[in-house]
Length: 255
Image: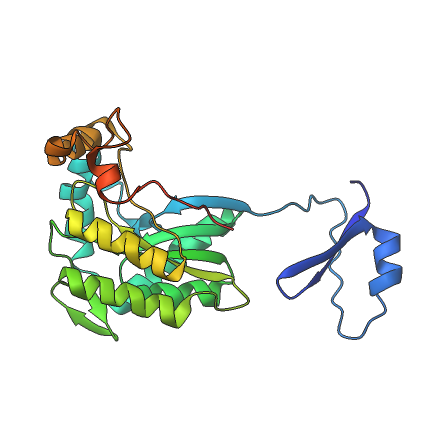
């Protein structure tokens, strides 16, 4: 639409139409800010349906190329995760969000640890965020509860931390902040973690996310982990890790 306008109240776009019509209808109201966007394009922000925003700083300092997701986790992700603190996760999340905004992303599903810090950064930045509280069994990562750094969390503690985040932050800021459940992957979480995570998501009607197989080496690792159940992504929908964890792929997207 050429010479068009938007009228926005809070988080909601109330009207779209010709500039003259919307200015006549809404422009004379008190406390209305008019932004002159002539000779510019006004468009919806991009949606990043899955990211680990705080990892924006981690790449580019390896001497040899990465060979896959497992190699990346061992050489880059897990070592870096273990020097995180509440403050550094806040800073890194702000940095990652700013990088997304620079490229036009205004909505992001962000899977990360330290949900309190991620929440503060998301709220203050103004982006629409689904915070997927990341949990994991196979490695011991630094995390925090109530702002206190702990060496690692047990399965029960991870699930309790996720539930606290849902209770405290879900649908905050007129629904701009959402909370979801995110067991890290099918090959580094126990069946119990996956199934209990799905049950938690169903209890609160929130999003559930996990990595099933985004790279060949990850599929190989996941299939080996779930060999007794027919692999992570079996031909039959009645067997395998996906069925065992109550349909891990019930991703509902970012609204």
